[in-house]
Image 1: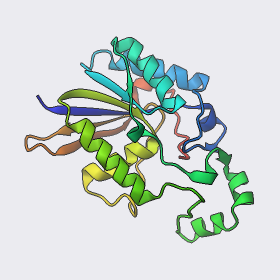
Image 2: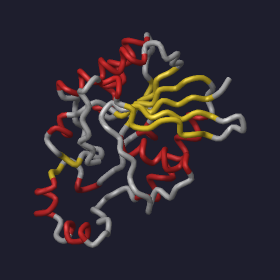
Image 3: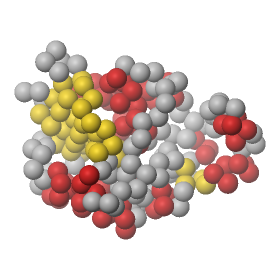
Length: 209
């Protein structure tokens, strides 16, 4: 049996709606996010999903619980699916970050990516996500991973053989579905990205991390 991974970003969180740079900041779903999760669960009910694994962060765990109720499955949790840790910038708005961390916007304008105190680091993050991807891809059948935009983007980079550290970002909307499948040779292939057709016009982007 082949391996199929469905990567689902969590629904809109209250932090997303407030334009907060979340990272590990633990924010619940907004009303819009819960509605997105229900639409997603209904759409995935006929997909033959064998297991659900979610990030422990509240916005992903809540999304997984809603979706799981349509699939009659119990979600497991995996710390390898946690969002990128933004360190001291987690839970702050961009105006707060501009005031607290001098020079951030100047570096962004110059094409640099600033590093915040306590930040995980992009190479460390890529290594963590790569190890998690190898682990979940070892299971045959269809696995639904309920996680975060940064994790899904990194998995797309890894699957495509792109450099996550220097590469451009993949667009990952709230409750979008990205699909990876194993080839006859056993390598993963990116089949679709950022699919929001099931949201019926209720999609939101709001991906600040």
